[in-house]
Amino acid sequence: MDSILDGIAFLLSERLPLLSRGKPDARLTLETARLFRQYGCGLLLSGLDEDGFRDSLRQAATTYSELLKRKQECSEYDQYYLARSKGEPLFDAIAAGESELARNIASRMSTHWMERMEPEEDFHYIGALIGLLQERGTEGELAAFERCLQGGESYRLEAARALATRDAERFEQGLSGMIEEQINWRERQRRSGVFDPYLHKTEAFIFVEGVALIHLARARGMSTRERYPLIPEAALGSPTSPSAG
Image (tube, rainbow, N blue to C red):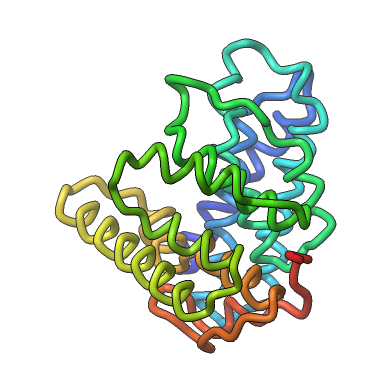
């Protein structure tokens, strides 16, 4: 793991100076945020470094937040990367227990679906989580999410709806399904021969989105388990949780 962490640290040292030059670069920002996320996951997996894990997630989210503050300066080629569903660093902020940072990101994310740039159901899923963070209604986003499925099913929808209604049992079902999908994705990647060591040795073993959802559930007074597959207890040890109504 040390060689993986050293490699990620080197890539970060190359990218961070570029982010401070000229116009904001949305693609580079998301790449950098992902490297911070992978570094944090690596720290947690290699030495149960909970503080390092949360600090790395905070840095990932902060990097993205700085981009959103300047998104009006971005070129037209950056619009794809500014789509709301690309905003994984929102999960980083929530998973790190950074309440204010999570709400700041949520308030600056796109409010318009970018057709042909993102799945509409993903847009509404993030919108529902934003509604929870901002302590406002989620009914419209959840209804739109369900319409997009055209009769299909989604564990994300089940988990988000359970969060909105504070249904702990239904939340467990939705989250368990999401975790199973993540495990299956990891196995498909392994069998395909496509191997990114920084991803498959770090982030693939820590489901950060799931960590974020559990923090939201706990903030809403819902009971959860201490650990889950791909979500070790150490990943859930944040001292604070984002407000979620």
